[in-house]
Length: 152
Image 1 (cartoon, one colour):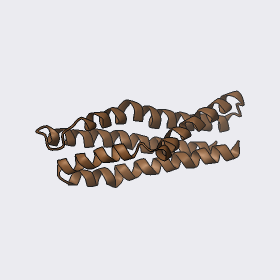
Image 2 (cartoon, helix red, strand yellow):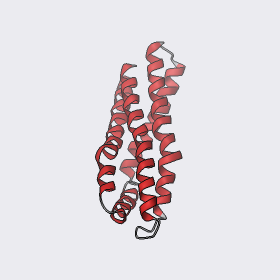
Image 3 (tube, rainbow, N blue to C red):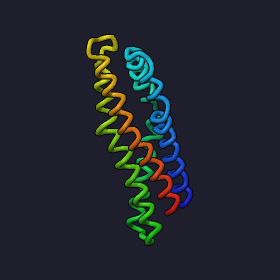
Image 4 (cartoon, rainbow, N blue to C red):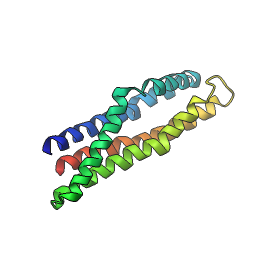
């Protein structure tokens, strides 16, 4: 069980690193280029990101968190289990739920945007702001999950 906890914590931290990279410099770089270029680049990223490796990392970590949360509840060991449960909830809610409810719908909206259309500049400015804000939540939640799992 300790190996699974550490592996899951590392996976949470890894996902947090991906989200941190996007929040700290990728989205800022895309926002600096002309909107048509930023839109086209992000549309491409959204296609390329849906790979087995990334999906396994993102959702495999969620599956591990579900298992660890169940184990923490079933074999309750006081504070250690509370930390593990909190870490799992942090990843599942702050990373997976936020991804599904906020980031994916924004990405779906971006897919429909004509990068050279009249609304592209307005849409891109709004998209970058909103997507990045929710991505900050995903990064922080992933890092918090890793820390709490290790504390557990």
